Length: 228
Image 1 (cartoon, rainbow, N blue to C red):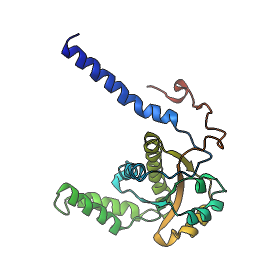
Image 2: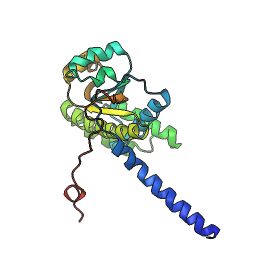
Image 3: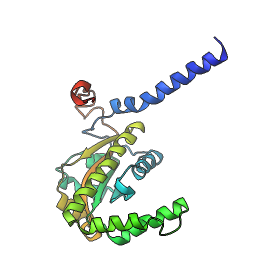
């Protein structure tokens, strides 16, 4: 076998491995029901948070804030509001995805100022686009904006799930909580925010979690996908 053939084989194997890494990670992950209290290493946590920062959002506005809660006392306060799901206190960190309730002209200007600075563009070059967004959101109610922003936060939540799986960190997404109570505990309303979802991060408890060895169940491809 000559050098070029070996190179082709090596490249093909490498591509296959790269393609399968994410799938392997997603097969590994599940919504852990119990966690063992072990801390998530700082580097792994930062990688997960960076994936959230880099996630796709409509217009690039990132209309949400993510509270990264390690403090045990705060998580204990949230425990009852999250219908006593043990991962809230047994995990290493709890992420609260809090969606914006309003999108102001100032917030839009701040975003475009960042675009100009990062891309070396002349300030005001995208005024037409910025003004369109200002006019659009000015017509929206607080409820409409919050619902839209919550959908953007869910994109980030999905990205975090994949990133955590690739870091071999367990993650449990949660909608089962009392939003009003969580907002009150974290004083989100005064910041123009509302909790839309929670994500517990930690490591599975191999002994206490009855689902730790359960087979993953998903709809078959021919039922899920429609090719046209």
